[in-house]
Image (cartoon, rainbow, N blue to C red; front, side, top):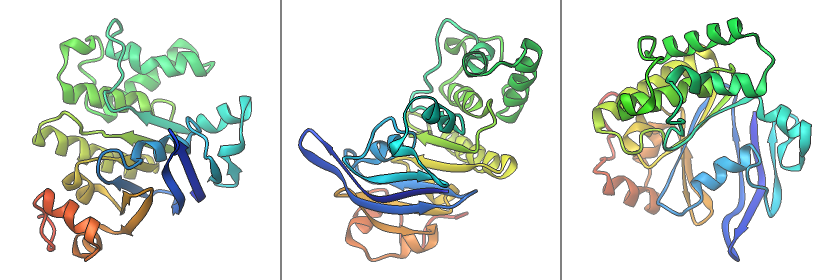
Length: 250
C-alpha cells in the first residue's frame, strides 16, 4: 500500500534519510522507532508530502505521492487521518467541534450527517459523554483520544500517528495503545506509528522498524525485534530495560 523507493532527504546540508526503501502492507500496523533526531517524523511527513524527497519516490498504491501537487495531492491526502503529537485541538472549540472541523472544511456533508459522523467517532474512542467539553476540561489522555476521533472521522484508509503516547503516564499510554490496535482491526485501516515508546510498539505493532543513520537497521515482527543481535537495536532495547525475551503480553 505504501512504498518508499530509494528515498534520500537532505535538511540543512545533511542526509536525514539516506536511500530508504520499504513497503507497508494494507491493514498493517507499522511502527517506526529510533533515537531522537534520526528522521522518524521526517519519514512520516513524506507519506503525505508534507516533505518531498531530495531524491527517490514515495508511493501510495499506484500513485506517486512525491510527484503530486494541487487537487491530485489533496485527493490522496483525503485517504489519510493524522494524529499529531500534541493532539492539536483548538482550545476555544468543544471536543465535538474539533472533531467536526475536518468534515466542515473538507466535505459537503449536511449538518445532520456531520453530527452522525462525530457521534460515531466519539463512541469509537469512548468520549460520547464528553463532546460538549473544551480541551482544558479533559485530561491529556482524553485529548489524545479526541485527536484520534478527529483523525478517523472522515473514515480514512490510513492513519498516521506521531508520538501518540508522548507525555502520558504509563497506564494512559497503554490505553491509547489498545485503542490504536482495536481501531485498526475494527475499521480495517492501515496504521503508521512513530514513537519513542518501545513498550507500546511491542504491544501494537505487526512490524517494527528501527531507524538510525537515515536507514532502517532492523524491520521485523515484535518477537524477532527483541531477539535480534543488531547492535543499535540492542542498545535501544537495553536503554528501555527490555530483555531479549520481550515483555509480558507481547
